[in-house]
Image (tube, rainbow, N blue to C red; front, side, top):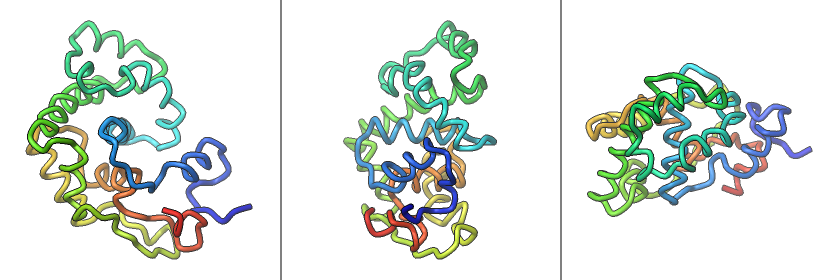
Length: 186
């Protein structure tokens, strides 16, 4: 058994996510958009709940194509609200549409969402050195700045805690504990 971050537990879905995705620096706009939407959908829920629904989200939300999501109308919202494979929360669904529009505006302004979002960590992963999971913060000055700026640009469900979870997932911070085999790999 490889030593892992405590939160990875024994669920194979969680372990695979931990071992292959979490904390890996991400620069692909569509994947960044996916994580942003999924982290927003997680608000008030556990990450494993969203991870189990991830494939359903991909199908329901056109594989996180912001161009398509930005055009969703009331008929599509009703369709999504009846989809048992995703979290059927109207505010979260509407926020995905609003976030798609804001995402496209950011891409137009900055050339890519990647170029915009990585500015909050000076284009470089912040490598922390936590020995225990309880040391890991839920928000930082960087996630607060990101949250404030995203909200000014029209994004929803992007509070400082959601932004920090996004930063962790997208590899903007390395929050693998130092005893985890992934700590030095990412």
